Image (tube, rainbow, N blue to C red; front, top):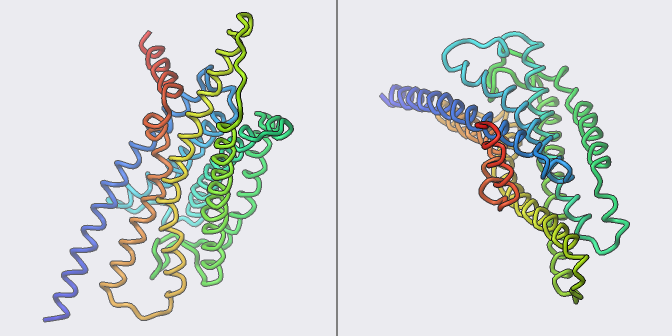
Length: 324
């Protein structure tokens, strides 16, 4: 009697998880694709595209879009049918490689944006001069190459048709799982997050110091146009910094749980677990995995709410241009 109850409970849990995974993945796919596409259009507007921080947001949105399109469609299809990425080894490896590499590059680009805000808030002009679009492009290229090198281990470690693993396409050995988990947790989540927080605090500290400095107003009429232009750029920079802080908070909230869950599953891999415990752990893993896609899909909505007039005006200009 007890065995049949456990079986029925496990079946109900698995069925519930399957439905949640399907419908939530569909929502994340639509939510993320629309948001990142709008981001790419808005951030490429003339008023923003020359700004280094806005350019980093723009490229980050492209990589977020790659991550979503590489990972979510197969999750949705796996609810109804057998997907090729769970059966064909090279497709499995390419899919995971694209998801993790693009997600890592997107995270580091946000870190670079935080670093750029710190450079602009520095008192010494030699630091502020480092905030250039050329340097941002170099940083993006460097992190892309480094991410590809680190996640090249996927082509050796990942296999298809695995049993007793969170996903059918997953690391095949304990050594591979530990290596993959450590790379993801450290390079994709932990290190960029620590650097984001560090440079974020330094930027806030510099801004407080700037507010305490004595500002001598320039009252000459011929300098007024220049002053207005400087004020407009400062307003854009301030809105971009607020957008950055909000995005960092959501990035930490939605990415840390998966890293912790992956380490837990690896540590307890050889422990005896009941069918209900396995079901609960798989459901938690599925939820934390979905949260990472939510983090990739929500930047546009963060920017719209917290970006102030700078982003909102660029967005409305884009909408108006579409209907003209």
